[in-house]
Amino acid sequence: MRFSRVLRTGALVAAVGLTLAACGQPNSEEDANKSLVQRAEDNGALTVGIKIDQPGLGLKKPDGSYEGFDVDVAKYVAKELGVEEGDIEFTETPSAQRENMIQNGDVDMIVASYSITPERDEAVDFAGPYFLAHQDLLVRKGDNSIQSAEDLNKNKKLCSVRGSTSAQNVKNDFAPNAQLQEYGGYSECLTGLENKAIDAMTTDDTILAGYAAQQPGKFQLAGAELSNENYGIGLREGDSEGKQALDEAIQKMIDSGEWKKAAEKHFGPAGYEVPEAPTVGEVVE
Amino acid sequence: MFDFLTEYDVLGAFWVTVQLTVYSAIGSLIWGTILAGMRVSPVPIMRAFGTAYVNIVRNIPLTLVIIAMSLGLYQTLNIALGGGTITTTNFRLAVLGFVLYTSTFVCESLRSGINTVPVGQAEAARALGLNFGQVLRMIVLPQAFRSVIGPLTSVLIALTKNTTVASTIGVAEASLLMSEMTENESDVIGLVFMVFAMGFVILTLPAGLLLGRLAKKAAVKR
Image (cartoon, rainbow over the protein chains, first blue to last red):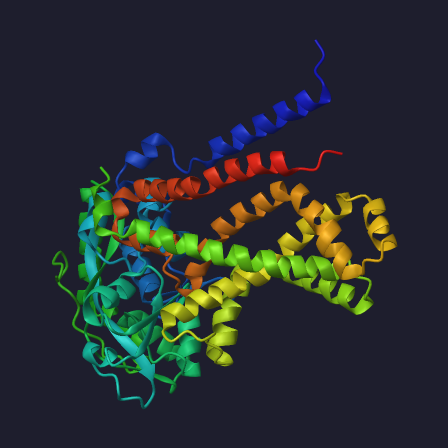
């Protein structure tokens, strides 16, 4: 039997495609059902989801390494699970894909300014919280016209990232009369703030502190605690063994003083007062 | 299953998408036709401008064009296009960006349409004493338009989907609502995605079918 060239090429493409698709499965079925603790023990390695574009929390440096508070927490808890720093594989987890990436087994856990909310709790499990952040406002240094959410209603121009919880909070609750500019990223907001096209930028104070620390002397935090964001470590739904191990690791990090050291290192330069460590297992509404 | 939708103004968001599409489509059609006229005109400097504009603008990523409208025109140069609030300003900036970008594709479709008109038509018109503007307006363009309804439909469909880029400067259209919903409704993320995919299909499919039929009817049989 003779096949035409087209048919043969087609068959080859299909075969390669199928092979690649098969390789695309990150973990075997059996592996995915194991708890986080078991996987760390068996493989001696962990894949951790982080943010790579939030100074202070998780930032990819030009040399390919990562730094930030989230990264330090991830390294600490991984070590408690018996995984050395060099065996951690960091992966970027964009906000919209976090639940999916856990469910698919693309990452073992996520430490990425991941606020615990009831909806998310339906899809994944959370260990922690390991930090209690608040939505806050970042203004130009010396601008004291904005101190609280009410000040924003005086026709102030506010900036946040499109679709984010912070942006929605402003629109629906704090300052419905403020003019909200939404951008794809915080750096555009920061440009606007510098250009005076925008009066304030809003999101979690941890992220704002990270940006302020990048350009010292230009911006300041207003100190308005607009909401409570409980950062938790996300892991696969139903992995109670893994959750317990992570909770213990976080508690140990807090008790040993490593927690405070890391927080002061990353948030301190912006004049941000590091709060008390949260109580593990207690989500502040 | 779809009860989470009641909390959101999905129709309102898609209405903004439709408005963006319609205004941008009208603007692109006008500016694109002018550009096509320039590219076939006998004046070298106009031809050069048309060619340069099309080749530069269509090769810039649309996201960049739209962000340049906001960061460059509005924030730095303070050009608000007469919009009083951030919302109207952003809407107009986005429409301007889409017009600048999409018109290059309209221009190129139209130019291919002009090439389908036999040279004899223009020559005969010139022989009758019509000048370049008259030849283009009365003889060539009407025939060219009739043959490019199909390609222009593709441009329109692409434009409809491209309007999602407007969310990068905060225009409250469908994809901005989608990012809000993916943030809040992480437990039903698949459904959210489906709703918006369906919404765009509902917008583009009938437009494609309708204009496809029109294209068949209008085409010049040669």
